[in-house]
Length: 489
Ligand code: BG6
Image (cartoon, rainbow, N blue to C red):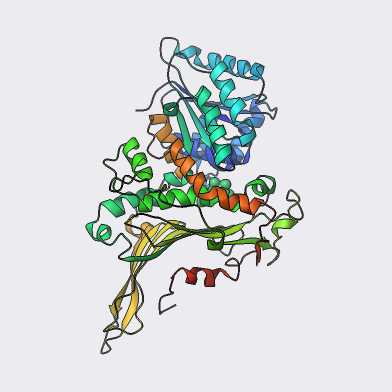
């Protein structure tokens, strides 16, 4: 349940993440009445600014649809619940100063618990000192304390282990909430219901029926403004190793014993049938199963290397396609193709499950069935089925059974992933947060290829024009793993 009297602190309040995701999500929750009673929000960052300037920033972070006066009034209320403290990340004094700020706010709760939620929207270089400083100087002794942390959780297996180890010195696992915001997306959550709430789906969910699976992330913009961060990490660490791998684990895990947080998280790492973890059943990715790309200037847009914060000879991939194989009886032999790219032709995240060919016999040239789950934009699930061409012909044509959310659920609004996750953290529900052992397995799968890419012998990524579908070689790459276009395409 939600705890009243809660102070939420956003560290990194002037950064990109706070601006794009954290503040809009906090405001969304507030506006819909989901924040606890007597909540207070503290922004914390190095930048010095007074309250007026801080309010201006909050206003600039939040979009008011059609300048709706009711929303604007809510925003004014929200600002009144907010305050700002500037300080360093490494020195104790700054945190003692922050504690005093808490004590001032919390005076009004004299006889009651006070709960503190610490949200770290920070670069990894300061995670550890901040976590330690909070524990030593800002930990509430009169209520619950929770720390929400964001990726990147290290750069490889070793750095992740040392980061987690250091965090554990100050914070217990049940106080720690590691966000992967893809776990908060409606269609990712829906996978559990689609798979385990439908006998028809479940019956065909294995290597006997499925030929190949693609999980695709496409963004139509480059790294503009984030080049410095991005160049150190690259697209594999930014998207594949976390967001797409999480989607894959939910798509392929065995049925959890229940919907309790620990059961879901257990099942992602341990398949009940084989007692092997589904992620553990994935061997490290092979170089020959990987295609890398980097965007170049085109369509009036700059190339990756034109960004001033990127080194001129950078070989950092902004596009990657790679194949994961799950070595268990359900999935052995099925390629899971993960693809992600910046500066592509469209914004789209989807899962495409392609079923096997109909066995030879009565139809020539018939398309495969496909189940597509569109995560964003315009959430949808559709199944490509062959149907007899209406009329005198007996020819089969591919058609769709289409569940597009905005048509089917006209009265429902889908909450933003960050709203869902922050609310879960406020309620103390860990179901959609990443557990430490999951991270360990995830890094084991990706570390060898990442070291190869970071090393001397890595090839240059294939160039692709800004605004294109990705490297030219992509179609041939996907075909190599069995994907067939439907006959109508
Ligand atoms: C973040 C990545 O984790 O996810 C960004 O660091 C990416 O590079 C973002 O743009 C995508 O999130 P969404 O919710 O817009 O798909």
